[in-house]
Length: 219
Image (cartoon, rainbow, N blue to C red; front, top):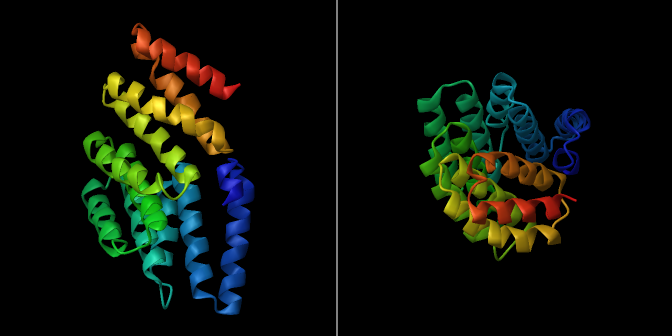
């Protein structure tokens, strides 16, 4: 998902559409489900809930679906329904994603639970988002600096949106040490969003120090 991380959405969508076609032609069920889940992710990021819902739904119909792809599809479906303001159904599918993915390897589960946290963040359920993102960050801390940094950035955003600037500063201390080790346009976007979200708290000395660290990371 390099193009997605670089925020090259048209290229990412085109590549995923082609992957669906090739996987279907080859009878590659895992590849087909993965590409459909990626398409749902891309359209979800673009806030196109209807298309994100369609592709996640299609992923769930792929034969011989692995537990990982099934869990991802439920997560993407939950996120898309949240974007469509169908929050009760969204929660049902997000809970199902976590249930199906409970026994995934740590790295995969970290990414799955993090994606659930992002969906909850987008729905404005910051307490539930924080719980999911906390778990994701804990799981990823020993397995993937990339996943760790990206979901930790989302956790900082959640703290700021929940009006918990002290927590955001504490989390940012850790993120400030990890971020230089990760090359990710997606992470850079999150850091810029953190700077924007911290603006209402800029009178606090700790927040001013955090904003200075963000400026350094973004240069």
